[in-house]
Picture 1 (tube, rainbow, N blue to C red):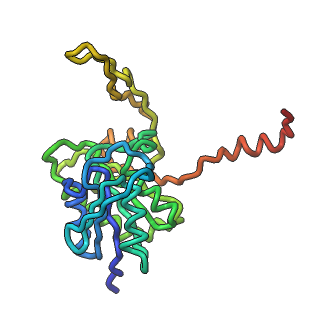
Picture 2: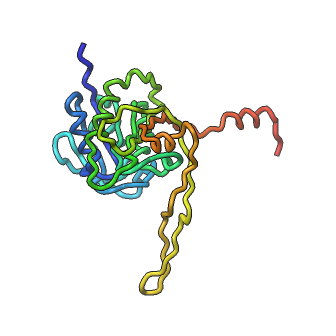
Picture 3: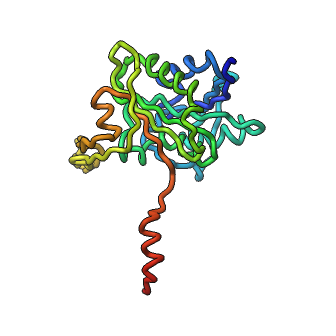
Length: 254
């Protein structure tokens, strides 16, 4: 039997014009009903932020593509409450991000944040990143892998509160066939805050630096480093259940 066409919402943090989201839209539109609600400018590292202190503007690019001057999380909120007010999407896909979202960097990522918002809304969600991205890199192979995953998504049997964070390595010309289910890796930045002085003698600071990864077997970074697609199931739950149980059992008095 032919597989059901899904109603898919695409968003990202690189902007609606980015190569990644355009390639993904083209690949998925062959088999699904695809809608785009994405930022009108780059919103990298915007994390899970909402715009609450000013009005948001929405512009229609075409009948299935809209942009806003807000964050990726804003895009999901606007899409669900306006575009999908009567019938929710079957899936939310954020990406393809121009660069990796590995390890604890997911906490900063606007790409991952959109998938987090989808999971909060109990909508199956995926965040996708091209870890080896450089300007001009062909995104079609990445988009084809995502389209294949979407067609088999039901096999994952995920609770909608769990979403997938996918990172793809550099393309080897033979397509993406090998993947690994992974956990989040860990990295530290060296010289994360850079202190400089401008030509007028006024100091300024730039947050950046060089990342140093801990190569841990089974982590997303280690898989991508070996040329594999990393698929990491994530869930938004900050409660430390072990500590909570210990504190309740301890009958601690302050």
